[in-house]
Amino acid sequence: MNDKLRQLIDSIAQPDGVAASAASAHLDQLTKPPGSLGKLESLAIQLAGITGVDKPEFDRKTVMVMAADHGVCEEGVSAFPAEVTQQMLYNMLSGGAAINVLARHAGADVQVIDVGVNADVAHPDLVNRKVRMGTSNIAKGPAMLRTEAEQAVLAGAEAVAEAVAEAVKRGTRLFVTGELGIGNTTASAAVVCALTGLEPEVIVGRGTGVDSAGLTRKIAVVCRALDVNQPDANDALDVLTKVGGLEIAALAGVILGAAAHRCPVVLDGFISGAAALAARALAPASAAYMLASHASDERGHAAVLRQLKLEPMLQLDMRLGEGTGGALSLHLIDAACRIMREMATFADAGVSDGQGAAQR
Image 1 (cartoon, rainbow, N blue to C red):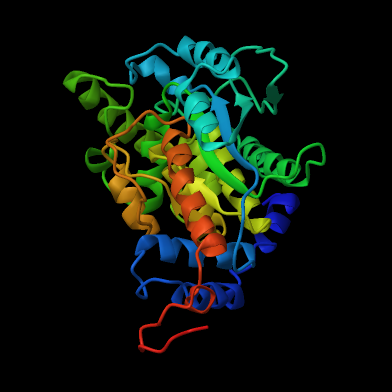
Image 2: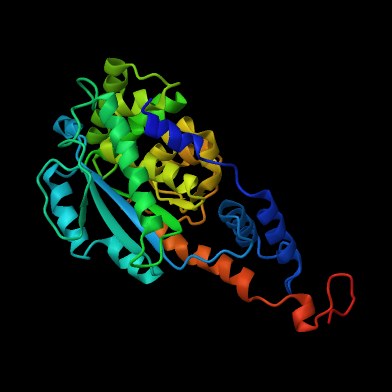
């Protein structure tokens, strides 16, 4: 393994139990019955443990959209041609995509990063960390070289490090995983199957909306990719190298980078879930920094969340990707943080606590 990647993995610590306990104790002093805010309370406690601050506040949040193309598109696995990746990239950079709208509504930035688009894309707002011009066709051989998979993982981690350290604006302290790449549900399904042992028939979904014949073809392509490449389930880098995608590897790096900087990382849907499985396999400690935003309508996402032992905040039957579910969940994260900072305690409000004693 690359020395920089090993150092990144080794730098990930366990969450701060003291801060989590302090957050829990504070919640029990607020003017409400204990536990009555349900999952908002467990979210607040998790955020405290992640950040090491009992009442965290996230002034700046960034959706990290990793963009790349997939050679497997030549197998007819998508309802859209591969050229749509580049077209949607420009749409996103001009602010017209769904993630731009939802991120603006949530007060979050969108950073678009090219790690493998199969074109020379130029735009002042595009971050260029291109590893190669798209992956090779996984139905015929490995997606990329192992060194390229490592480079893509590090590209995601380095993008996080730069956003945390940014001096022009206050540095980002919370990240959302986003992606763009026609064909990436096929590669993600292959990654999930390789890492979990689940069958393609259980995991492969309709992605951009392929019909029944297209779904059958897509399942067959994933089966062929796994058979041709024989990825090693005990080596996440081997899985990413053989059947993954550049943006999937980069999102794994975003997750590792966020964990290394004690930042929460909000997972979007199925592609983000595949990246999260890879990140967890590389660094088990990173799992504690993951938040599941929503349950995607893509077939395999529920199974991925079960594998990750994560409960989604939202169930909206979405399957767009881009980070859209993650952006919507930011409102709940903000709500949990505001409860911690703004809600009165029994003592503050002069309200009797659960024991019937007046608090002043």
